[in-house]
Image 1 (tube, rainbow, N blue to C red):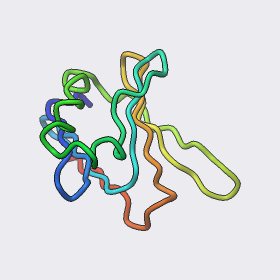
Image 2 (image 1 turned 90 degrees about the vertical axis):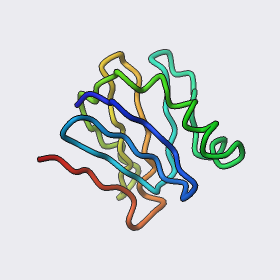
Image 3 (image 1 turned 30 degrees about the vertical axis):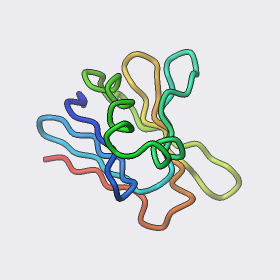
Image 4 (image 1 turned 30 degrees about the horizontal axis):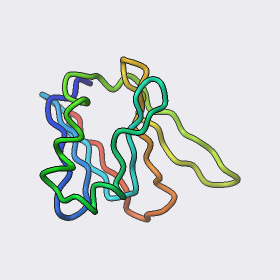
Length: 105
């Protein structure tokens, strides 16, 4: 799914949206470039505020989510959203009970 909008709001929520889909999460999150460089994290976003944090998400716009891959540790799993350029968005879902929502038609 192509990402057309990416924002981080005051509620510490990452929101991604495209033409016919939407994704939101309250769990800790970070985004990594294809080389593994961290260019967005919820910790930094909380410190710099919503507008500045949303600016950090601009590289996501135009990318596509091409897969969702679980990362297992013992009996829990976190999720990675894999991007078409080799980057990824890491969701630390094991830290939050109601951590994410994906809406598609």
